[in-house]
Image 1: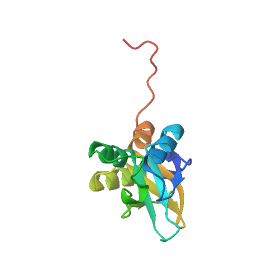
Image 2: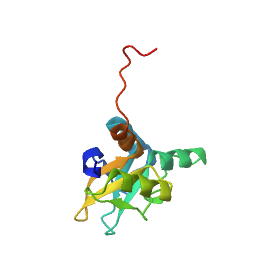
Image 3: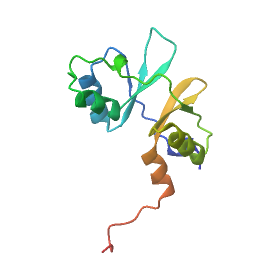
Length: 131
């Protein structure tokens, strides 16, 4: 199975000037654990994850004052749609992260998470008859 088969194609994109609270609201509303950060002043693509928001709040930082740009990971490891899920899982394990931005010709086309991979690798178990 390939990354294109598992990835979410609903990509939340935000800017570096959003506050962490705004980012958290958008992520929560879309039910996603990561957002792609596009900075018009740079050519790079970054990522903000729920862990980044949690770390900031845990440090006592004000989510209404903290800007996404200060918490964005910019040295992002990208996946290609044609990667195998094993390749994606290996990159995540080696890098110690749970999300990969999927690029197709330098454009973000999706995000694949550990949960996406697990859902593809694990058969769905019906709650009926369990117990």
